[in-house]
Amino acid sequence: MRRITKTHAPQELLNWCHENKDLNHTYKDLLGTKAHAVLKEKLIEEQGALCAYTGRAIADATSHVEHLKPQNQCVGWEDVEYRNVVACFPADGGDTSHGYGAPVKAGWWDEAKFVSPVAEDCERRFRFAWSGHIHPCPDDHEAAKKTIKILDLDNKDLRDLRKARIDGFFGFGARTRNRPLSVADAKTALENIDRVDSSGRLREFCFVLKQLLPKYIAQEGGR
Image (cartoon, rainbow, N blue to C red; front, side):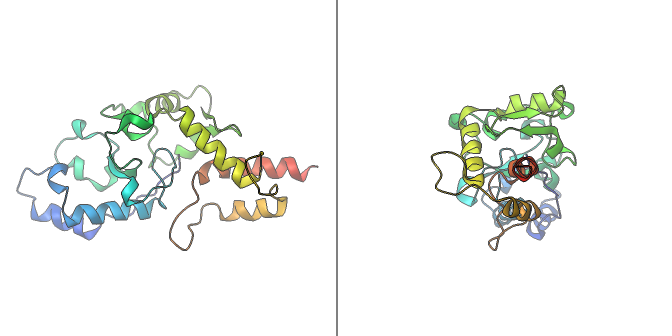
């Protein structure tokens, strides 16, 4: 999970809220409006086009607006509060067929046991292995353990996808045609891993690679 630094709500959303301040409107009323389209676009941009929970690459067609605190738990205007929404895979927030992420979290909520992607320490609460596995950090961190379970972040399909990206990036395994990453290139990659490309996109699972790069540099540099 990569930390998301929330900026400011798009003006279109603020205008929508102001225009409807005397009405009992909810997120459902926001759907289909220009304000909603702009909101989703802003979230994807803010996240470098990565799913807030899984780190998968997303676009408008492959993501939905996810509520950190579920809509069924929101009161007042919380369900249209900018700090409570992120962009997540897949397009249909109720599609549980993938087996992980926002859809399987559904309406669950326990703030004390949930590591939110907007929390300052969220990247430190998970540890990734070369195999693609995810572990709580430290191992006994209750909120990290619960978050992995609730989002099923160690789901085999998601784990295999992380492993494929790790292998491809470092040049491991028979499935990749890349030569193993040089130490010099690894150091350069580490310096730039948090930077978006010319399209405003981050590398898929960049936070995983960010953890593994120092280990790779230390291992290969000592040979």
